[in-house]
Structures are given as C-alpha cells and as structure tokens.
Length: 342
Image (cartoon, rainbow, N blue to C red; front, side, top):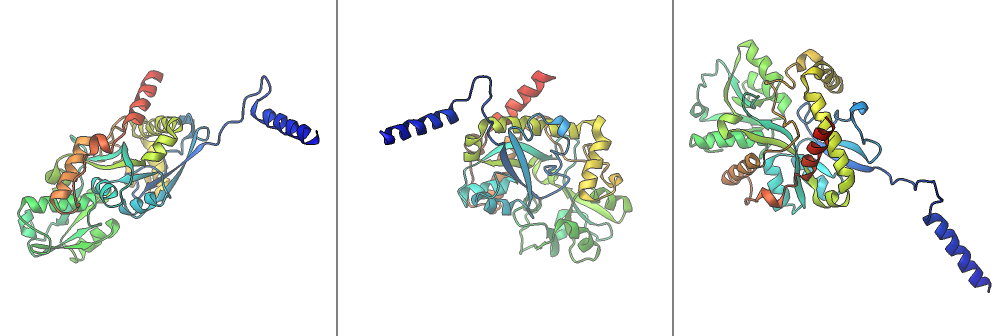
C-alpha cells in the first residue's frame, strides 16, 4: 500500500509540473543562441548589427547572437564542421569547398555584400602610378599580392589574368599578403599589384601615386562577394526563432543603410573599429559595396563565381547552388513582415 501511495504522490507531483494552474503562463524556453562567424569590418557589419536594441523586436526574447571573428572565410568551414558556429560569412569558392571537401549541410540564407552592382563600388586592384604598368599583360614577370589563395579577390585576379592568357607561376608570381599590408608592400616595391580595400583605395588614389589597373567587375562582372551561410540542421531545428532573427537582422541592415541614419551608423562602426568617423564617410554610399535592401543574395551571380573558380582549378568540382544549397525562405518572410508593418 505504501508503494501505491508513493506512486500516486509521484504522479501528482509530475502532473503539477506539467499542468500550469489556471491564469499562469508556462515558462518560456531560453532564447536560441546564434553563433555567427565574420572576418572583415565594416563590410560584414555582423558585430554591430545588434547594437541598436530599439530597432530589434525579438533580441533576447526568441534569440541572441554571438559574433565570432575569424581571419577569413575558409577557417569558418572548420568551425562549422566542429559545431562551433551556426552561421558563417562565406564567399562563393568557400561554399563550394564546404560542400565538396568538408561535406557540410550548408545553405545560403542571406546577402552580406555584392560587388560591382550598377554604380556601386567594385574591388580595386592597384599598381603604383610610376610602375610603367598600364595593362594586364604588363604584369608578366611581376609579383601579385593576394590576401588568400582562393578568396573572392584572388579568384577575380586569376580570372582577369586568365582573360589575358596569363597563368600563375608561368607569367606572374602570387604572394599572400594580409589586406592591411598590401598598400605598404606596393609602395616598397615588394609586390607590383594588389587588392586595396575601401577606404584605403580612395585615399591612395587621391595621392596621385597609385592607379587602378582593373576591378573585380572588369574581371567577373557583378558578383555575390560575401553571403551568410547556415548549418542546415540548425535552420530546421530552430525555424521559428530564426524567422524572428532574420526579421531583426534585415531591419538592422536597413537601419544602417538608410541615408537618414548615415552619421549615427558611421559613428557606431567607427567606435567599434577604433577609427575616426571621417575615414568611413564612404559607407552606405555608391563608393561602398551594394547590399540588397532585404538581404536577398544574388544566387545567379554566386553560381557564376563558383563556375569560374572551378574553371580556374580552385575547386575540385562544381555544385548546383539552387536548389540544393540555398534557403531564401527566411529573408523572404522577413520582407513580408517588414512590409506588412510599414
């Protein structure tokens, strides 16, 4: 009998935990933590997007974000494979390698930055004005600075050289140099050509000592330079919370890129980067990269970049991005919600 009474007491206790008394709301689940990889500011924006709580509807309620910095896109493949991040800032070739080499279940979910769209900025490849280099074929026997073999910049350079029937090691030499060191290496004549990012690109051109030999758009046309990619299982397991996240994410990007918020947005980014705001005045103008207003990536351009990388021998084989490795449902739902609330 004692055993029966004990069993009944235990059942009652469990029922009390399961059935909330009338008028009381059951405890909410903890917010989903979203770990997002990034590598470059101000282009990626990820570390500052959640610094304006008044424009975020769901942060801290259904989700939180932990931005995690990496040296580039490639290390984020390893981190995602190890379960250390849920989303990553990928370039086209990195997506192909994540699928073909790492065999990751990964989906393209949102735009970050696009290159050479309309009158917007395209990545510049610069030489010294006094170098005597006036066309791509003048680079024969010269040294080229690349931030990383297989990066978006590296792919664009190789594509341009390929257009001019030039090959690495045969006609020119590639030297890996971190982006911040490229201008000094050009100035010191340690390399003859290199990728120079904004705002340094405009600053160097203003001195008259440098010139643009070509741009990424010249080499490849408009391109999906960087995009947000996510672990497929993470998307499936947290779909409701991620719908909230993407609504806030798109709202935040739209706030930063709105001309009426320009000065405040630049100040936030300058404070994060510990730079004077006046050096970042180009942000969110035509001198900056293009960002889709609802963060919809250009999947066609992304596919074309992967095909070029495969043709250049940078990827073992091609992949079909759409429909196998893309899920635009989150940014499409964000657009619907935002437009409905305007």
